[in-house]
Length: 525
Image (tube, rainbow, N blue to C red; front, top):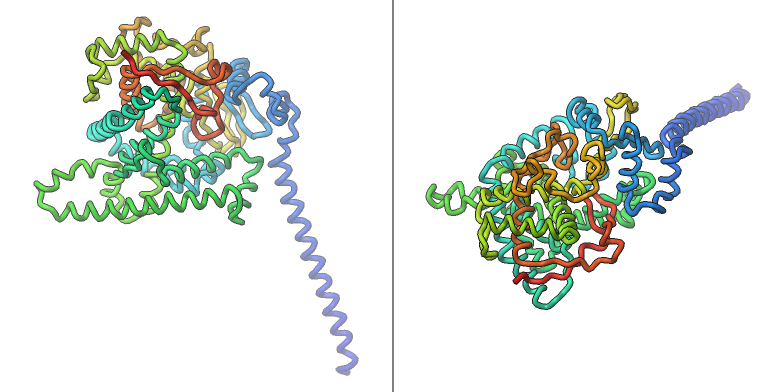
């Protein structure tokens, strides 16, 4: 019986295995069909045949425009609602102030940074304030506000800026003017801002203006390669490179490792210093008070032992403070080189306020505040060339913008300060002209500065709940640098004729002139 039943059992077992195999195969096929349908839903937008999408995919917009932002500005200015939809990107782009208010204030919680954005910068910025949403963002914002909005912070930054100016930047430019050498102002501003922000954020002096800093090079590389992640066809490309540790992702990993090592060293050293200060007599602590003014020291009083958190938030502020100020100064000096009458007005105002001696050193915030025409010129420069040309959020739920534009869950929604500065409906027919007078009362050169009535028409510093906390300090730094350099030096552009009329921007997180800003520096008088 056993010999007879064995084949039967085997046949039955084989039949059962065969059934199980086909059942598993069927499940796999069904799973593949589901994944394929989801893929089609996600990527079918690449087959859109509308005029905007075809121009984007074929790059035919380059036939008429130098920069992508200029093409978007043209499209938005011709749109009845100042809003367009680039279907192949799943991106709603707007220059409508009502929409901007809706995104940044009225329906703020529906438009977070979102995972698609945060994943791009996660390796570099971690969970820093500019890369998170919800409770983590709110906690970091309150922590940053408690430090950045203090008068002592503004005073500390002004002290750093003046030291960098008079001991490094001005002597360097004086040497260049004596040798008739061409210098890249954009590069100088980036190095200057990096030194300034490292001292303000970390209490670290990388001395970039004096010598090449390995830390600065690693920071630049990590920043640039992080931004380039956003330009690939699919996130899968850079994620696979990261998984296999090859290509750009390998280089970025090495750069971030160096940044992390320096940050860890600084945090450890700062913690030991603060512990040492606590053990010293009160009268001796006063001598070291200035060392406690940097952001890291302030944050350590609240967050003592979380080195990863401290690293993330400090690196975030370093990136934001360095790149935006450098970008704004670069555009400002480019515009002044093309509009000598504005430069003359700035110098005339400086003579009235500071006196005729161009060697007079700015020593206080009050002196800078009296330079109203300079303030207007800086605002006008950022209207036309904002340091951050656009900003994107990702819709958590379906929505309808105030202009009637439908937004689907998961859509990228972008407001465009660069384009908004070129809207006739906001700034009038002379919107493309560089006119600081538009910011002065009754448009008189001796008038006082008049801030924008509607912040959502000028979201250069964002607006609403995420408005920039470092806005006032950035303005003071820019004006201090500008008036100090202009009173001592004359700058002539050496760029090509096409770049002289219209700058070309490199892709990135902030507006960066492709090829830099080469100038010939001459000492005045």
